[in-house]
Structure formats: structure tokens, C-alpha cells
Length: 319
Image 1: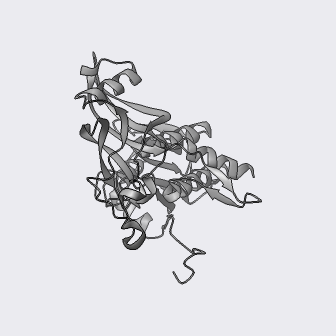
Image 2: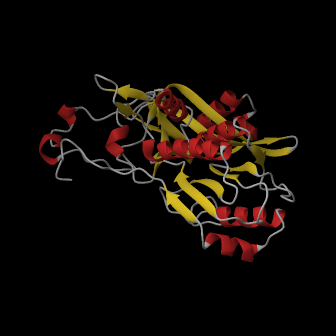
Image 3: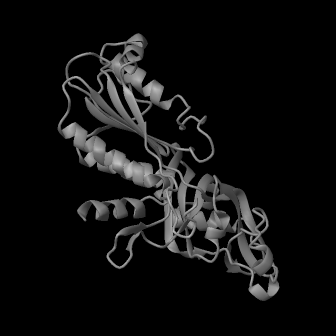
């Protein structure tokens, strides 16, 4: 039960990919991993270390001695999940309601976002005296809601089912009154205690405020949003920490948590991007090897892609 409680804590700490990566970074460092940055010189990388890159993480536990590029056992997962993300110009509204314009991210079941208390989280670019910085933001209170149309205004729902236009019907309400241009930027600035003119951009999204929980008479089921793929991220972090504590003298362990897997893998932080390959090359070079050594090691390496998928459903057993 201690492991399940820890999983629930990881889920609750990770409303966005950036928070998930930050939580993985915290857990890895607490277990003895040395944090590095992409703009550091990896001239003598630690045998046990990790790098945080926006919403992605790469962590490793390599033999202290032996080849510069040993054979690897890799686990890959992803930090992002489908949802609703705030548009760059979000302030909108209708019929006396203030609303925020959102875009659907990934393959979301959009009906599942109706009539839920929603918070706001993500990252914000802030201009300061020393240049731009990136700050995490998390607002855990009922701030937004996507209300469903009442049945007497949607009689066809019983015969034709629920029909939602992603641009027209998913705009959350968050206040009453006329449209307030700049209101969202001022809200974000106040939440971060900065001047509104210093908020230069954001990658913010809504999240369901319901906490992760155990479901059922005997608590046999985990109930939470973002199980795809935070469950695998948590398992990967735990597995790497366990592998590092009993390191193999000839084989290295690597964990890669990519971002953007719900919308394709070709970004700088996606699985088809350069992040992992560059990190492996830099680790080998820092240990006295080269790209050829990495290619040789990969020939005897193995990677497990850890993801979540629908397995069975009691109401649709044929699926």
C-alpha cells in the first residue's frame, strides 16, 4: 500500500508535464542523482545523474568504471496527457459571462471535461531585470468550469447523443461580466506576484481538481486523471532509483520521460526528437568515448516503451 500511496502522491503533484518533470527531478535528486543542465559542460558527468528539459527528463545510472558507453537498459514514458490548454489571447465571453479561450490538446474525450471544477497550471515566461525566466504556476481552486447545456435546451441529446464542437462548446467560464481584455494576464501576474507587463507568454492548461484516490469497496482500483502516462513515469523513476542502488557492473540504466507524445513525437522534447540521442552522445564524450561507441553500445541495448492503454471495459466487454 505504501507504493500505491506514493503513486497517488505523484499523480497529485503532476497536473501538467512541467510539474511532472519537476516532481521526477525532485525525486531523483532526493535519491542521490546529480542534476545537470543542458547548457552545462558535461566534461566529467556523474555516474548517476539526470537532466530536466522543460517537460522532459533524462536520468541515468552508469557503471563507474568500464567502457565510456556501456550497453543500456532503457525505459521510456511520457509526461503529457490530453486536455484543454489556454490560448495566447484567451479573454472572451458571451451573454454576460467571462470565459477563457482554450484549444484541445491531444486525443481528448472532450465530454469528460464537462461540469468539473477546474484549476489552472503550467509554466509562465516572465521578464525580469536579468532577462526572461520560466516560472511554474499552479492554482488549485475551482477557477473554471465547462458547463453542459441543460437537457430542455438540447432535446436531441437523448436520440442523437452529445455533440460538442471543440471551438464553440468547450470554452470554460470563469467569471461574470463583460469581456475583460488583459484580465487573464493580470490574473496570472497576480498569482506570480509580478507586473502584468512582465508576463510575456504562457503554456497553461486546466486540470481537474479531483485528487487521485482508491476506488471500490476494498480500494482495489486507482481513480485519477492523467494515468496515461504518469503511472509509467512514476514506475520509471522508481525503477531507476532501485537500479542505481544495485548497479550492474557492466550495464547502464537510463530513463527518458518525453513530452508532446499526445500530439506527435517530432518536437525537441518528443521521442523522435534529438534529446535522448544528444544526451547519450554527451555522456559518452564526457567519459572519453565518441558517437561510434554509443552506436556499438546500442546494438546490445534494449528499450521498453512504457505507456497506458485501454485493456477491458465491463460495459463493452466485446472491445
